[in-house]
Image (cartoon, rainbow, N blue to C red):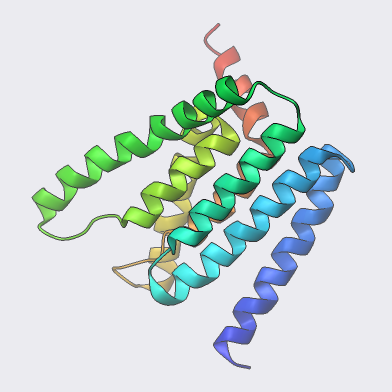
Amino acid sequence: MKKRTKESLFAGAFLGSLAVLFFLRFGLSPEYIKVMGFSCILVAVGLIDFETYEIPDAFHVAAMGWWLLFHLIQGDSFFFGLVQGVVDGLWISASLFVFTLIGDKLAQKETMGGGDIKLFFVTGMYLGWEVNLLNLIISCVIGILFGLLTGKSKISFGPAIGISTCFCMLCGEFLVEQYLKLFW
């Protein structure tokens, strides 16, 4: 069986599983359609990044457009919601950008691609900054596991971000709430 076929089978099984899990979590609702659409974009990002080590900007634009569409459908204040989405996206992505610049200088090579940083901006819009911080941590763990399992020194981070984001859409808010209850 060709490698590309195995990836396609995995992607199909992953999306099918997500469809069931998201339905159990959200029911047949606008939120279900929103997270399923975003998951499809994330799977496409993962497949392309896995093969090319690049995330085309068209996927970031599509994901932001999908977020904006559902933000408008839910009837939220356009200006406030847009500002909140941008702020949530910037918390992690701006920090990553600064750390990446420092890491690039210290390592004298690219430590993280710009597409990954932009993807964390988009995931912040969907998840909020608190859950996106959890998303970053889980993505790093998954990325490290990918690196260890494949033995490669350079990994595609997009698939790890996609898997982690889907996990966080399912139960990230709950996990963050439980963690914060430990301290308040």
